[in-house]
Amino acid sequence: MTIKVFDTQEVQDLLKAATNIEGAEGNPRVKQIINRLLADLFKAIDDLDITPDEIWAGVNYLNQLGRDGEAALLAAGLGLEKLLDIRMDAEDKQAGIEGGTPRTIEGPLYVAGAPVKDGLCKMDLDPDEDAGPLVIRGTVADLDGKPVANAIVECWHANSKGFYSHFDPTGAQTDFNLRGAVRTDAQGKYEFRTLMPVGYGCPPHGATQQLLNGLGRHGNRPAHVHFFVTSEQHRKLTTQFNIEGDPLIWDDFAYATREDLIPPVTEKTGGAGLGLKEDAYKEIVFDFVLTGLVQGQDNQLVNRLRASAKA
View 1 (spheres, one colour):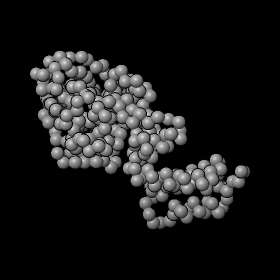
View 2 (cartoon, helix red, strand yellow; view 1 turned 135 degrees about the vertical axis):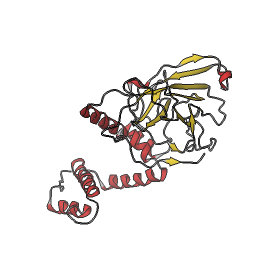
View 3 (tube, helix red, strand yellow; view 1 turned 180 degrees about the horizontal axis):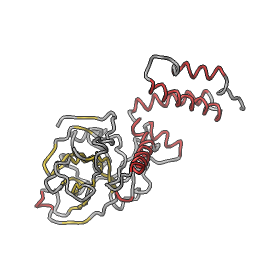
View 4 (cartoon, one colour; view 1 turned 60 degrees about the horizontal axis):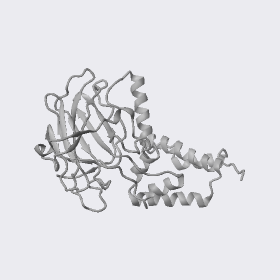
């Protein structure tokens, strides 16, 4: 078809009316964003000759996405969350902010409310026969290498089945299994005693994987561990590292991998003395470097809907 109606007065009037772009009522920012997005959609329908069947398939898909509760998962899978990181990296460069641990995506599986421990947190609250012990430790410092005391390091990751507590479809985990929070000591040190995670895949019958199938893409992530690091005098850091050796490190469907976020994994013994499930264990040393506030403000805080629970 060669029908083009986007530039007609009828369609332009419809766009103005639908978004009330010239009206006095409503939120000006909401109207600005919706007007642009709706205009882009209208033009895409024209340019690509999108059919009514395809339009209603898309509407039905959005309904399914909502029923599955996977909008945030899809945002990661389509690179939207990675784009936000790219923009924040560019914003830092423009402001002359250099150094610090690289940011990367938060993902959709954080749960607020983990109790904060001083210096050390044991995260494996539930048994997991298929996961070996892991110690994650390091320091939090500023750009000058000075330790940051009283920083809060939050950590969360999947179990050996690729499931996160609170979201586990099997119901096998308590809310804060493999989730923890530590307050650093005077030397900026933190430590988590936990179990080795594996990667996960999108729910195979969910809306996200349905769209990825249409794109000819997989929906899998390498094994990784998430972190928030906060301090009163520094910007919040949202990051994660991948587990060295995972074959999907550079084929992450959520595009979260970065060069400086693949720390080495070391084989250790003496786990029995640390209260680990086995004497042989793996250790990852990962040091965080925080950047300072911008004119006294933390411009890294992101308001989004997050799950929460009570320990």
